[in-house]
Image (cartoon, rainbow, N blue to C red; front, side):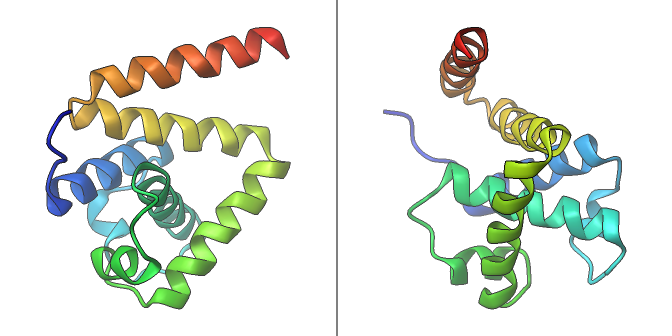
Length: 124
């Protein structure tokens, strides 16, 4: 079993991945901007963090993104709702999750997820 990367490296990789996918800067994502595209990218980053580390509490996720726990809860729930409706957002969320794993050198996890997702796509 691989040692898990530290919180800062994980947060940095997820923010970097989301920023790349959504076309915003990592600096803007960690700020307090309420601009729609930046907020969505930040929410997806929180969602990706929770997806990669389901054992983490909303408080821990909120602390990483310098938000309060209610904001983290809302962000994750909002992304779950949005990806159930918007296919293009679902693709961007998957790209963010995959890219963050690649940035953290979790190649085994990346290819396992990629293989599973592609098989589901071929079957459906």
